[in-house]
Amino acid sequence: MSGTPPALPRHLAVIMDGNGRWAQRRGLSRSEGHKAGTSSAKRLVTRCRELGIPHLSLYTFSKENWGRPQDEVTTLFDLLVLFLNRELASLVEQGIRLNVLGEWEEFPFAVRQVLKLVMNRTAEGTAMTLNLALNYSGRAEILRACKRLLEQGADPAALDEARFERELFTAGQPDPDLVIRTSGEVRISNFLLWQSAYAEYYFTDVPWPDFDQAELDKALAEFSARQRRFGLTGEQISAL
Image 1 (cartoon, rainbow, N blue to C red):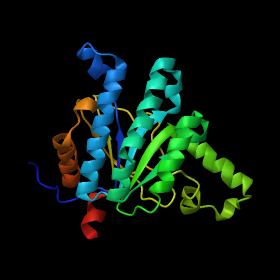
Image 2: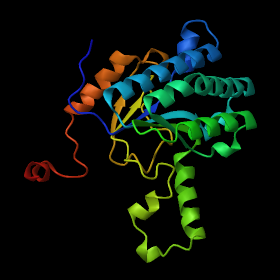
Image 3: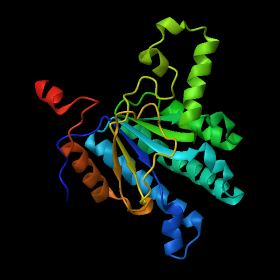
Image 4: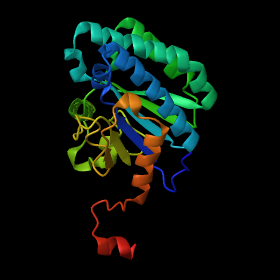
């Protein structure tokens, strides 16, 4: 069994990609791929909690996902509701707080009700924050923050990054240190655009349903071996 990597991200973000292709290769429906992806999400949450990673963000449903076939969208909602209902007791027991990134108020009533229930029941969790990006768009999030600041009459001369970040969905949380994308795609797909300015990226060909503990440990081991510069030169880092 892999050992715990020597350095861990405070905030891990994951673009969970490849459910449909995974299913297609096996002659299964896309719905079966999404079901398998839900099991991978559960494994990831459990492993991150075991390792002590305090913030985990999962790109669950983007604004662009509304353009998928209606039956697939319905399946995604059904799986989300099933996942939350099944895992509620475990989230509470493990001290995991559920938070939503995105305009989830646009979801169907039943989905909104379950989200409200789980967020309320897990609100006191302090061991880990689980962010589900739902009806999320990085560009829309930035525009939303700008509109909120305008509505509040914010003074442009006094505006800084810290003030701006208080209007983001991730307010009060550290920026992602590591962003993982599965299934061979090498792009960020409008995910946490502001927050990931200095994140490390890890791309793997492994489709999301096959992304298990060993694959996560490989990604974390590579992250721990990287020298994070944050815009500094090698000489500046050496002088720190």
